[in-house]
Length: 167
Ligand code: 6OG
Image (cartoon, rainbow, N blue to C red; front, side):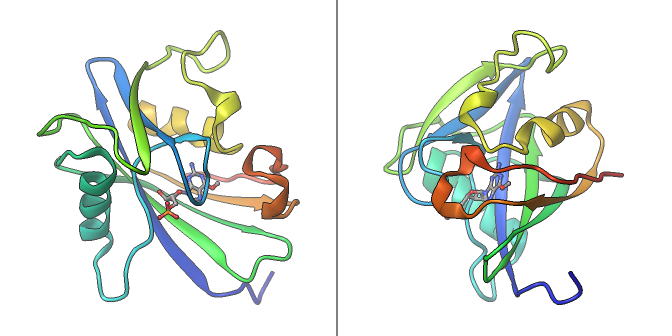
């Protein structure tokens, strides 16, 4: 664990407005088939915030005043990278959210509790999302680490979460 491989830096952004959260159903690439926020890789020389705004525009067709709300890092056995994901949110947006080549946007009710009959489709999302969405939705800043035991080939939904910290 002392020698984690080099970091790949990503963003994800969420619009959370009037009790609803905007997610995108990913149509291609990394995480295909899952619901997620809008985001992607930070390009060399680009700031994290500029990348978040660029990806929100590219994938959902909108702009927003994004505020950083958390960070998580994960690693899985056999990967040659450590992944760092910077999470942003906004309570409003400009433009009209549109389906793009990459994402189909869809609004979901923000649940009072994630335990019961949640309107958020946890089964069709990355395995760790249910651990940090509640912290994000509560308005607290979070920092987390996820260690996965399976490799990418088995599909994102089959990952086993080993550990999670936040604070
Ligand atoms: P492109 O390859 O499409 O960017 N991403 C994750 N999202 C969640 N919820 N959990 C993860 O791991 C993730 N790892 C990466 C970052 C990939 C998009 O997928 C996000 C980007 O928004 C537990 O450019």
